[in-house]
Length: 142
Image 1: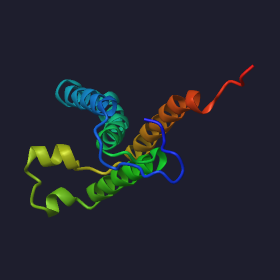
Image 2 (image 1 turned 180 degrees about the horizontal axis):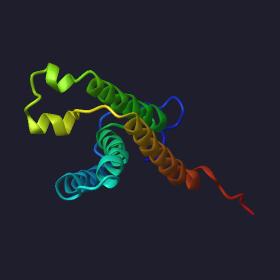
Image 3 (image 1 turned 90 degrees about the horizontal axis):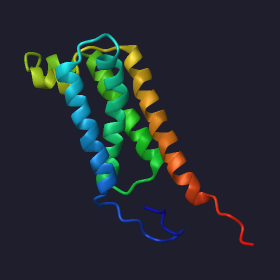
């Protein structure tokens, strides 16, 4: 969706089927990784890279927000969840025995996860930059 002209009002709520489809595919991939992959790299690292891309796609599927602030907001949210893991937040909520809570909120802090989230957001920004680049370049008329 092209950016509105300066001074034009931007609709904040809207459904974007492209982002929603991407979010659905990424969610299914994450579920498959959680259920079927038990390795030392893809599950812990690849899943962390993909989760921020999923969250970004989900937000952009419902909200027409600028790319960089949205990406940075998703990154900040992911960092906050990771730091809550450092504080054993799931246990403090009394949900330490809930498998769902431990999977969704996480249960162990790792510095490397912060790097994986950052890498995922870099992938998002590169994708958005490449996607918007052809529209920003115009060929001179002859």
